[in-house]
Length: 453
Image (tube, rainbow, N blue to C red; front, side, top):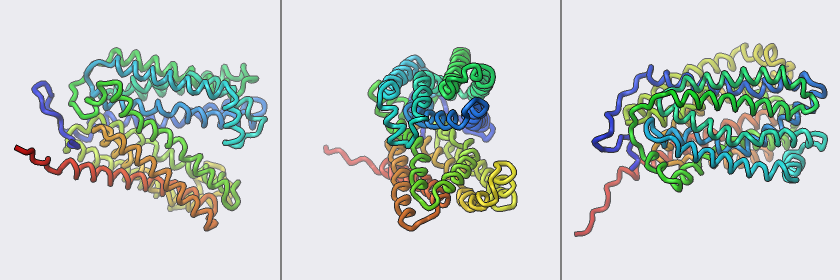
C-alpha cells in the first residue's frame, strides 16, 4: 500500500534509474525559482521607499502583503498536487479547471473580507495596525483580489511542466515576472504615488499575470513524457479525491504562512521586544534566504521518486547538496564573516549585530532540516498520504505554542526565543514526518489477514 514502486500493467513504462545529473536538471531551475521569488517584495519595497511618506507606504504594504499571502495560501499547494496527479501524461484540462475553480472560490472568500469591515477589524484588532495604516492597507488588499485565480492557474501549469520534466521555463517565467515587476514599480508606480501600497500590489498582480501567460504558452508547446503511475494519480481522477488530497496540503501552506507571525507574537511579549523583533527579523530573513533553494525539493521528489532506488538517490543527492549549503552557512556564522555580514552588508549597529550572532549560529542547520522536511513531504504526497503532511505542519505550530509559552515564563530574550522557536518548530515537523513514514511503511508491510474458507 505504501510501496514506492510502479503499479503493474502492460502499458506502464519501465522505470528509469535516476542520476545526479537527472536530478539537477529538474532541481536547479526550481531552486533558482525559489530564490528569485524572495526578491519580489524587496523590489516593491525599494519602489515604495522612494515615494512620499515612505514609512506609511512600507508599513501598510507589509501588513497587506502578509494578510494577502495568508488568504491565498491554499492555492500554493496546487503545484505539488498537480505534479502528483498528472505524472507526465494524460489530460490536463481537469486539473486546470479544478485550479481555476479553487482560485475563484478563494477570490470570493477574500472579497468577503477585503470589501467588508472584516479587513479593518483584522488589521487593527488582530494585527495591531494603527488606523492611519488601515486605509492604504485595505486598498492594497483590494488590489490583491485577483491573486488567487492567477496564482492557482500558474501553479497548476507549473505542475504540468514539472510532470513533463521541464522546469527551465518555470525559472524563466519567474525571471520575466521580476523584470516586469521592476519596470512597473520604478516607471509606473511613481506616477500613481497617491495609491502607494495599492499601486505596488497592482504591479505585482500584473507581473504575475505576465508570468502565468508565459507559462501557459510554454506548456502548450512542451511534449508529454512517459509517466509512471502512483497512488496519487488514482486519487486525483475524481473531484472528491482531489479535494480530500489537497485539503491537508492547503492546511500545511496556511500554517506555513503563520509561522513567522506566530513567532513574532511571542517575541513581542518578551523582554525588550523592539530589539528582539528587529534582530529576529534580520536573522530569519537570512536563514530563509539560505534555505530557499531546497523548499521545492518536495516537488522534485514527487516527480522523480518513482522507485525505491530513485528515492534513495534523491536522498543521497539531498545530503550532498544541503551538506554543502550548511557548510557554507557554518563558515559564515561561526567565523568573523558573520560580523562582516551583519554590520557591513546588513548595516546593523554593533549592539544588534552582537545579539544576532548566536541566533544565527543556532539556525545554521536550518537548510538541512528544511530540505528533509521537503523530501519527506514529497514522498508522502506522491503516495497519497497528504494527511500525514498536514499532521506534520500541526506539530510545527504546537512546538511554537508550547515552547513560546515556556520561553516567556523563563524570561528568554526575544531574538534568542525567536531562534529557538524557529529551529524547534521545524525539527518537530521533520521528526513527526519521519515517524509517520515509518509507521505507514510498517503497516503496509504487515501481511494481509488470511481469508476464511
